[in-house]
Image 1 (cartoon, rainbow, N blue to C red):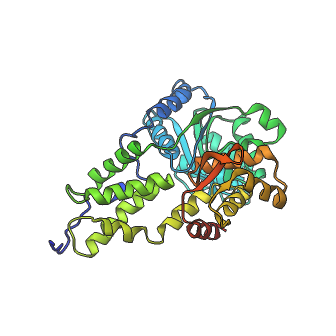
Image 2 (cartoon, rainbow, N blue to C red):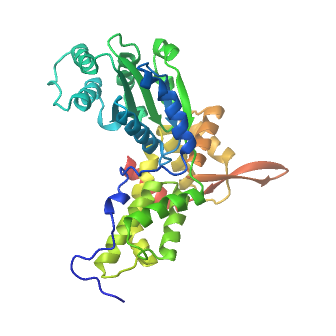
Image 3 (tube, helix red, strand yellow):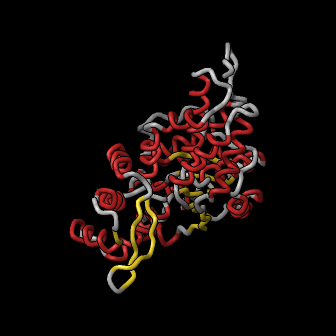
Length: 363
């Protein structure tokens, strides 16, 4: 084994493994980029565009595509604001962040009426169109969600196009009747990546993040397997970077499969907790029930009977939940026979203790 001395490193460019890193080209999201660009094209004529909803499971490229298109708009002089809603839990915080991004200045102190802050934003825009992206919009409380969207889409002071980013359309049902009748989103769907797509996305990161020959084939394939299983590209980026650091620490010039195994110890729970954060209380309860049962041959009917008794869930809503758990790759649904008929069985994709620990971590 070669020894790694001094300042030598396996990393050509470590920032490539940062989840917020924006590659120069976005792989396997060409259709979504083209669709979003077409929706926003009116801003280049100084016309407010329609509103867009980018929807899909976690880690399917929604944020990356939106940031990529916003960056291209900025190159054409368009005013944009990208906001992470989970950290902006009040209407004031949302518009203070927009003010800060447009002006480069600290926003007015809290206590200033919201309408005055909106006036200051309008002055900064000088009748230009503003494109606002609200990432994880479903995290906004009901009152904030309605106030923010009302101020944006009904503003007489400035022209706005809204891009909502979410894992489901549930937030639309939380809009009040008037707002729900006037806000219509063009939906752009982001499906889960296929195995081949995962391989190509991660291989690009390996080629640009590590020096040639650093990543062994076995280590790379192990990471691809883990990403395909839990459906989270960000988890793959974490494993690549962490495995590289572990290999460096032991003085190796190559990343071996044991480095990947050490990197993933305990981190699978963390990655799953992020996906669980996209579930509501009924969906988490269904997941908990599925992974708490001792028997192996679990049918959808078994789960429904338990949830019906415990939380009074209706049949239609139950199958929406089961479908979402399958899309997020917590479970697989397969047909089989029970008695004389056919029924759907629930196949668990993870060890029960891992999912149950991740649920506890989320709570």
